[in-house]
Image (cartoon, rainbow, N blue to C red; front, side):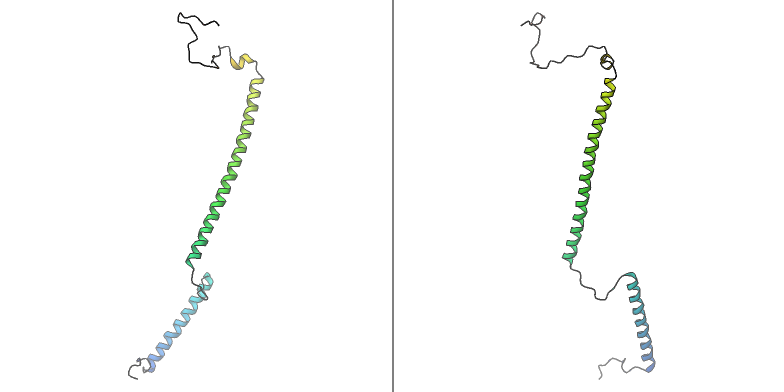
Length: 135
């Protein structure tokens, strides 16, 4: 038994000190386990993490988040459309109130209104001598 470690053949003092070290490590281990349980970290029954499943769950969570944000955007766009319609109605009522309560000359003034040809042909409406065509 020349190959056996010298610990088995050690002196009683070294055996006692080793036993003390062992007991202190056991106590330390127990306090660490208690602390881990308090923090919600448990190594007992820990299962290996399936990376593919882990990343799949992450992707699903992100896609759910994106979908909820898109739903919020659609809801806000509907609200904006509704408010724009209300704004147009209020502006129309404001314009009706503004122009119906005044005489026509106060809203348009006394200026000559500009004339715009409804069917422009691009041809001059005058003869070469400067007069107008009479048909």
